[in-house]
Amino acid sequence: MENYFKLLNIEQASIIDLETLSDNHKKLAAQHHPDTLGNNGDDTHYKLINTAYANLKSPSKRLAHLMLITGTQYDKRGTVSNHLMDLFMSTAQLLQDTDLFLRRKSSTKSTLALAILEGESQQLQEQLGKQIKHIENEQSSTLKKAKHETSLESPARDLAFLEKWQAQLKERYASLF
Image 1 (spheres, rainbow, N blue to C red):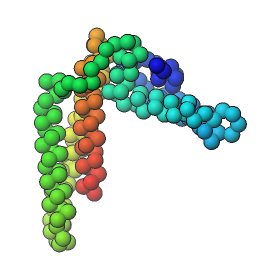
Image 2: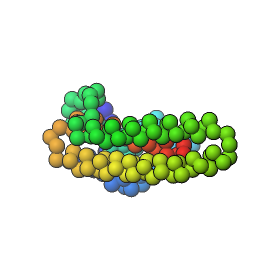
Image 3: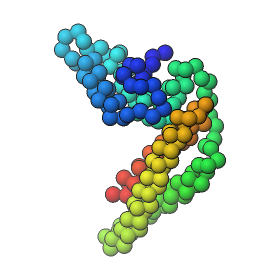
Image 4: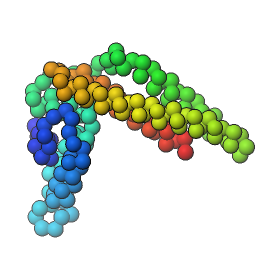
């Protein structure tokens, strides 16, 4: 099992400097890119570098990798922690409201009717932006708490849910434009 932290020369921790991660990834990817002149180009190592970067960039995958390299058992299945249930419910409702609006908008043919819907679109954009920020804050808080946890299983699972919700919200946000 490859240690992604060592591979990318990053401190082995739940919270890492993402700028350093990005810089180290760029340097190594450039060195090992298959199209690199000479014998340095290595497709297998290049793919491993990109996999390591993707895993360390994602907070949930980073914690899962930490558990893997330390030999900690980790069950990915399970539910979100109780303290995130309200956030789950509000996110689900906002996604549902946005989907309903998008269906209404897509079936609207009149320019005037589309213009009338613009106010609701802007409200949804604002709500989605606030929910995305709320999730980002919760991710940060969960990572900080994980630093002091004896088991990373629950924070890793919570972060996986938070990342999924964040991606869904960002997708809906983009679809409003």
